[in-house]
Amino acid sequence: MITHIVCFKLKDNSAESVERTAQVLRDMEGQIDELMSIEIGIDVLHSERSYDIALITKFESMKALEAYQVHPVHKKVIEHMLQVREASVSVDFES
Image 1 (tube, rainbow, N blue to C red):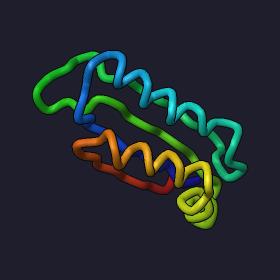
Image 2 (cartoon, rainbow, N blue to C red; image 1 turned 180 degrees about the horizontal axis):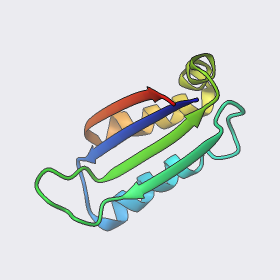
Image 3 (cartoon, rainbow, N blue to C red; image 1 turned 60 degrees about the vertical axis):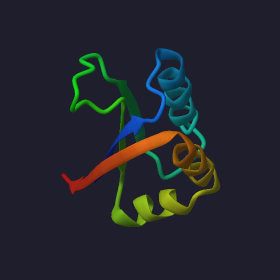
């Protein structure tokens, strides 16, 4: 199993903007066959080093993760994220 985690820092981190972007991420659920599970977390600490949103997704294999990366639904999400994010970091690990 591959776990793919991405943290996003948004240009506009108002509650409305964060929730709107979190919903864009949530909307991937059920639309991408390779996506086994998805969890979206919104930061509650709001410290200087905090990121605004965490995306945690799980895939059966690297091949499934690669298919997700080029899926049309995910590509639409990437378009949105390129407009709203200030920064992002990610980690992918096998378990």
